[in-house]
Amino acid sequence: MTSAKGYSVYLPQQPEAVVFVNGFLARDRAGFFWMWKNIVWIVSATNKAEGCVQIKAGICGPNEVVMVSYWRSEHDLKQFFRGEPHWRMMQFVIKNPNSLCLYNETYQPQQSGKYSHEPQGIAMLYPSLAK
Image (cartoon, rainbow, N blue to C red; front, side):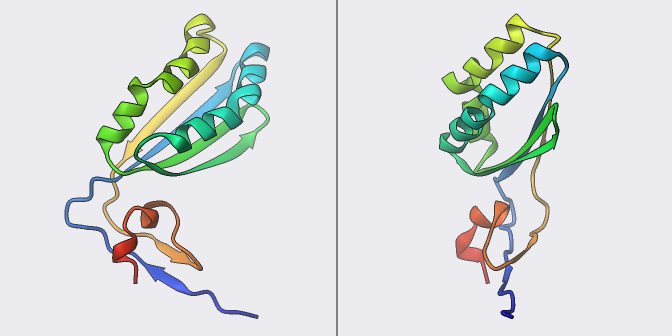
């Protein structure tokens, strides 16, 4: 049995990084099929966006997916909202306003997490501070 290598990451005094939590909850058949047809593309498009360092997606149930993405700055996240991939995502919602419940929250880290084996999430943003 191997032991886990521990990682510590200490954030800068004024971290610019933001964590964006967003989810999709299908409210009807159209929302269900749209969500499952597009979720892989959504994850890929987000992951390719300037300033997105990592994205994690999880299935909460047959009608719900939640994603957590890590961004270098709030500015980068806002630029993504103004871009073509986000516009494409929102077209379904505009045409079918009752088919999906969308939710999102943005957080700025106040302290480091703990990581074993390798850095993930916020630690990916500050590799030079990992110990």
